[in-house]
Image 1 (cartoon, one colour):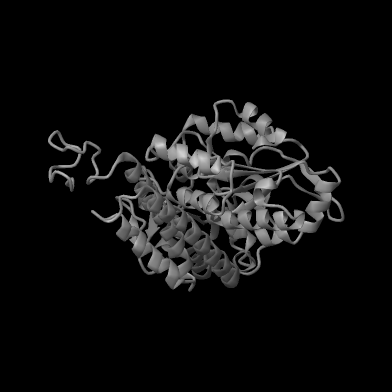
Image 2 (cartoon, rainbow, N blue to C red):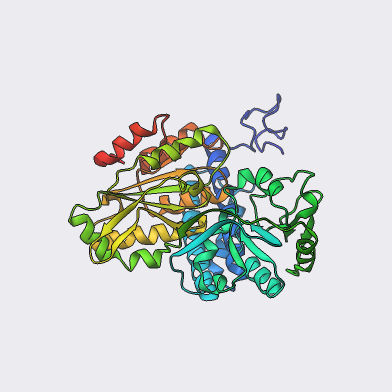
Amino acid sequence: MFCNQCEQTAGGTACVNQVGVCGKNEDIQSLQEILLYGLKGLCAYKHHARRLGMVDPEVDAFVEEALFSTMTNVNFDLGETLELVLECGRKNLRVMQMLDEGHVKKFGQPSPTTVYEGTKAGPGILITGHDLLDLADLLEQTAGKGINVYTHGEMLPAHMYPELRKHSHLAGHYGGAWQKQKVEFEKFSGPILATTNCVLIPKDSYKDRLFTTRVTAVPGSKCIKNNDFSEVIAKALECAPLPEHKVKESTIGFHHSVITSLADKVVDAVKAGKISRFFVVGGCDGAEPGRNYFSEYAANTPKDSLVLTVGCGKFRIRDNDFGTIELPGVGPVPRLLDMGQCNDSYGAIQVAAALAGAFNCSVNDLPLTIVLSWFEQKAVAVLLSLLALGVKGIRIGPAAPAFVSPNVMAVLRDKFDLQLVGDQPLVDLKVAIAGRN
């Protein structure tokens, strides 16, 4: 890489620029990195939507334009680059909408359901990642073969779709968040099918049982390009059968259509003083100890509040007993409402918009607090969608992204009141309860 100003290696000792990126200052570089990470997340969702037949030429054109803007000697303007970053958020919102519509069209209208967690006696296949079409194909190909199929990680929300759960051999869910897979996959005696990102390089103990799809690949495992899962099925029949081991049952499937259908009842509950506040606590999980912040934060939310969760960040909080809350005319509903995968953040936005409409106010005037754990590129895309909609007061953590410069962080803080989580979750929670996000 060369600096356009002095034609020397960017950031090298002879470079007059000393910022390491082709004549651009630190803040332009920061915004371009945010844009690139956002585009990666957008394209991950776009890939899933395209496989379901959902495309938008305007999104395609924007991806080209945004990538072009990061080329050498194209854009050195902070304001223009920030607008591209926000437009990435708007286009990602459209992509999440397409993916949501594609899922519903293909797999049916979601509804709450009870999921068995653990394993059942007999051969089994574990499927992880995000691609529900891969799961559908696997279920079709394993039908009648005496093999149970279990979801893992971000596949948990698959159970809310009737066209997937109609398969009796979709036996349940196994394990937790992606970062625990080396322990969990080693204990699972059958083959594992990894459909998207968030797969780790496997241990030798199970790499011969790990299969991947398309661009997902790891050393020592078989990558399946054509969705013919016959090798996975054969491996399942070779491997030792799984034992009967029930861990618990859980209720998932609070798709935005389910919650918005109850918007009038929720409004009545707020007006009657039965719901004091809404919390969105989710995002991407990770292994850092600081992520316990989200567990403690959610566990201490008021008993008269609702907690919505999306993404694998749910695994930080879903083991708590949140109890129920009474909705007038409906009865008790779970306080913790699992809305789905990270792409179902679109649903959380829809719920917020519906509530704002019902209360005749803006989203920023709702008794709503958004606390997101931060890890990878799709989290960047989702955050940009929220900012593009003008949502203010979001807290992210556990630490500031390394690619956001201090000046850019200051702009985001001033423009959107974007804040980092503190090191004392109960203090932050107290501020939120007081209505100051």
